[in-house]
Length: 423
Image (cartoon, rainbow, N blue to C red):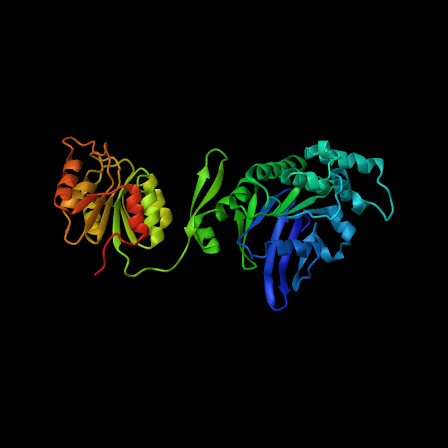
């Protein structure tokens, strides 16, 4: 336990009969940057209050540097761990210097004035946080980012081994959020400061942390590396949303894109819609269909195609072909079967060449009785010799089986649940 800056062992916190933190356990190694994420009401901030002993634990133990938290006096605890709260409020307009100097209180006896050493420590804390030029400014006159940097300077003036952050960027814009987290990460890497942070922004947590703790309803759902936590399989059931998780090549970190609230409701009378797309041409349509509740299929798409990736994330059944391969006869037969089972077929403005022409040729092989085919117009859809795709689509339009429709009109039909008319 000596290697751990902070440990929770089966900690439960309750308000009356309601347990807001249940049998919570975790270990934070010295020098780590560990963040806690989870929906509102997960018990994230409760953990910090339990460390501060501003609320009592019902059971379990908390250890700081291997020593039971209950055995620390308030001053001893403040000398080891500093807390940056969500909001710093004061009824008095202290100067920034005075706010940072408060960080030296754990080392001063009652009525003792600060020493030259305290002054040097405060100056250094303000220098590190780029707030020394604000020292004579009133805390109430500072911007959100400036104020939060001053609060962090005050925490650093405590000379802590452990910095605890309770959603420190909750009320900040993206500029100030990056400013604060980059500063904390720098202190973590260069000064060896252990950081335990409660963050509501999954992407920021993934970008700056070494490990993550995922919470829900007061329970530690999972603790692990960024890759082990920031993935659809782990996050979807906790946040109850459909999402896409991909690596951002610029930040070299995983990022989650929320698509919509996840629902288990299935419309049993929803139309079956098959989408012919590729290269991102189906993104809006596929997402709208899924969100509205249609039963959606897609294909044929090559593995690795951006529309295939989206279908995978949205859990849309997709007929697939190997990367860079033309559609084989076997895959084509499977696609014809899927299309036969649909009531509506949507053809996006995806370019058609010899490699994916069979997606269009399948229209001549399926039973079209009772089917509705919507086609997004495109001036440069067909790259096949003899314009085979345009000819097939044109014949279906002439017969009244297919019809051209603009994207915004198609989206209105999807959202109006009117792709087909139910008798």
